[in-house]
Every structure is written in structure tokens, then in C-alpha cells.
Image 1 (cartoon, rainbow, N blue to C red):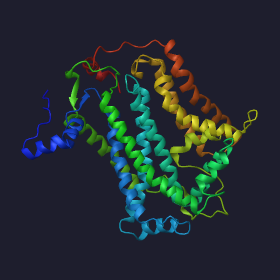
Image 2: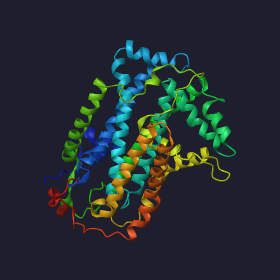
Image 3: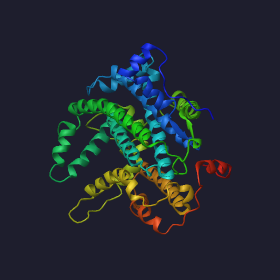
Length: 418
């Protein structure tokens, strides 16, 4: 297989530039000759998909911010007016809202792939940690942006989530008032959330850069979890992996375009198409679909535990369910990375995926005794997966034989789905 030569400036100007500011050399090394394993499947294309979706959200967010007025009397009207009367408003506003949903779809698939193939092992702990921080920042950005719509559901969600801070001992009331800018949701809240939404977008961009840098420092993982043993097991990123990424991005964007042009409001909420009124509230507060599993965990506890109120315990579980992801590289004690060769773990993994989807469905339902019971059971398994199965299962699990190399893995490719 032909190997690309190292970067070599071809004229005096390029050589002068390369010695003083070697940006072309950096991009050539990072995106042309960067070696990637030959056995990558399409689940590894979601990094490229997420990059495109991030740029899409930044572009559309910038356009929307030019037409948005962070005023409680004008926020809802300016958003709706731009969509109906602004130049390409019919495109940019749904593009941003539908794009946020598809951004999270890609993130959840990306996270699931990491858990399945053990992408946090073999010196890749910081790749995983920076990725989880990206996810947490995304959640914060999405929440603040959701409130900026200033619809009925938006301000109710802001009141509920901000109200959870009051349960924190000693500093809770201060945090609540600082976040909202007062005792309730109002103009100071909108000002703060507009700034947070805008600034955190660039913080997200910084962490994405750190995430990509971490990957280039330790090398790209692969479905086997095996280390690269020779140059024959890799190919240059361009054109081999790049073509696969472009194909996957194209397919993903086809689904995205279908929702954007034919069902732009499918993932929205009817209550949020009414202007916010602090004196009114929807019958049920339901967050966006990508928050539903954690919302279900939040309301799973309805009883006090000693001196701890049910609200505080629910808030602790809510926060823990997100931040436990950071510690996965140290919770998983298995020496084998990929679930391909861990038959028992594979069963628990797919049960976990079903559990998260089930939690999302439970979070969208009106609370009842039956729903509450199932929510509590699903919450228990969520934490069992991280705190018991990951650290303890490797002591008893019998793994399958691993291929001796990536080349051997390629020969076995026809025998499996992924």
C-alpha cells in the first residue's frame, strides 16, 4: 500500500512560512498522513459526523443570535418573527433546533461505541474524560438554549432545574439566586442564560480541540482494542478513512434533512410554542428528549432518607448519573477492551442500552405508582452497571480468544456484524 511522504514545502515562500508558522505541516500530519487502524468500522465515523454537526450548530447559532433580542417581552416574538419573516429564517431556526437533537443522537451513539469497544483503555483515559466533559458542556448549552426560546415549557424547566440548587445545604439558596439573578425566573435570568449559551459554545470548541489532540497523542483506537504492531495494520487518514467518513456523514445528513424539511417540529413540544407567562405553568414539565433518562432518575426518589430530603437525594442521583461517566476508565477493571471478546459483558451492555432507552420513555410519562416503580428499578440497574458490573464482572468472566493482530481480525470480519 502506498504511503504518503512527510510534508515537504515546494517553494521558498512555503519553506519560509513552514519555519515560522508550520500550520500547513500540522494539518498535513493530522489529517492526511495520520495513521488509523485498517479495521475501523462505521461506528468510528461518528467523530467526523459530530465535527460537522458542531460546525453546523455554531453557524446557525451565530445567525440566530444576530436576530435575537434577550428581553422577556421580545425574546419569543423575535424568534418566531425571524422564522416567519426573516431571510431564510424558515431554514436557520429549525436547522438549529433539529440540529441539536441530531447532535445528541450522534453523541449517544459515539458514547455507546466507546463503552462497547472499551475506547477508554490503553492510554486513552484522557480521550474519554475530555469527551465526557464535552458531553456535559453540551448538556449545559442545550439547557440554556432551551430557556432562550422563552416559551411556556422553557421557563418552567428553568424554574424546576434551578430550584434543585436550593436543596444544596448552606450554599443552595445563594447558587439559586446567583444563577437566576433573583428569586425567580425573569429578565436577569434571560440575560445570564444568553451569555452562558453563547460563551459555553466556544468553551465546547476548546474541549473538542483537546479531545482531538488527545486522540492524536495516543493514536486512534480500534474495535479489537489491540495495539498497532506494524505499519501494515494502518492506513493514512486521507483518503481511506476520509472517504468512509464522507459517506457516513452523507447518510447521516440525509436523515437530518428529512426531519429538517418535512418534520422540523417533530422533536419539539407544543407548550413551548406559546409565549412564556410566569403566572401560568404547563400541566407537566417535560424536558427535551435527550435529557429524559436523567430526568427520570431525578424524580425516581419520592421519600426522605434520614435528614436528606427526597429532592436532594434525587438531585444527587441526577448529578451522579452524569459524572459517573468520567470514572469509567478506572471502574472497568477488565484487561480486555472490546465487548467482542467479553460475552457476559456484552449481555450486560445491551441490557444497559435498553435500560437507558427505557428510562427515557419513563421520563416522558406522567408519574404514577407503576411508572415510579419501574423508574426506580431502571435507576438501580443504571448504577449497578457502573459501580458493580464494570469493576466486579472481570473477576469471574471468561473471555473469548483475541486475534493475534489487526490483520487477523480483518480476516474474521465476515463472521460478525460489528
